[in-house]
Length: 364
Image (cartoon, rainbow, N blue to C red; front, side):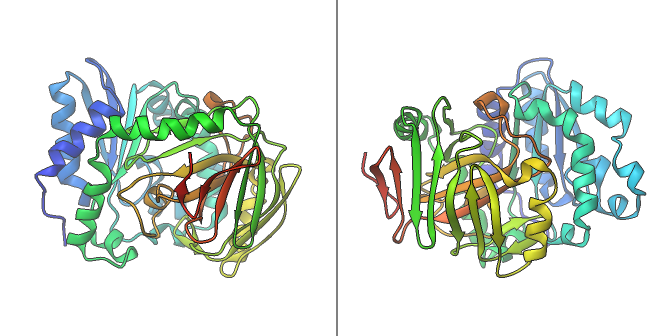
């Protein structure tokens, strides 16, 4: 069943191309998507054409890019996986912007790919994609309503579409102003403490600044995020409310204990082997690369979908693995796994000892 084109797709495409990427005449924009995303992909092409930019469109069958579709990744020898395709590597280094439309037929397709193969491909293309992390190349990732995404969220496809457009087509100027007030308090703080059920985690913020995502690299936006000082994480965080989602796996009940910035103990109720394997992927995978605070007023429930879940109003998330160099982050890893903690029932955020959010409600 394909998604019926929606009149809001035009506005969605304009948001992605104009607000998120600010595409300029003459730009070469790499547009990635899957067949079910065709209505939005075509609106994106039209929007790029109106701006005098080139649309370099690639349709894949579930992979993040044409050079790494699942069928190929499953069969290719490891030495080939570990080396980027020279032509594709050059493409990623030379395009002016990247736009990814995620419209899966099955959100668990990549779960069939062994973790070592996924990590080999990620490592191969990491040098070329560093431009995304350091802010040199604008990019945006988004989703398009498909039955698979709706089923993950326990919603009908129609209801999921309403939810998606409602979370994306917001007044992002107003949201930016609102979130900036909170982000400024974090910028002025030396330490943040996150407290909740099974959780008491302290992170150093001195010298680091938060970035407000209000029509930027992810759509929906609705968070502010930054890179805690890499050796400061102390304490425990228990993701008891929601599973961590990565590579088609749902890892429930993740518990992480940190000392001097490093995960020294980890467990999970499900897929614990996958959790440990991911944390052992490389030296940087056991450190925190990102702290984010969810603020999107249109996202109030868990979707088993990290792009949405990390923006739930009243949540915080950490990402183990690589940080963002343009935000002062120095941690390097082939992993970047966002895991969401719900703070709306018995949780709080403190900045230098002052409670600034309690039970998901801001007090500043």
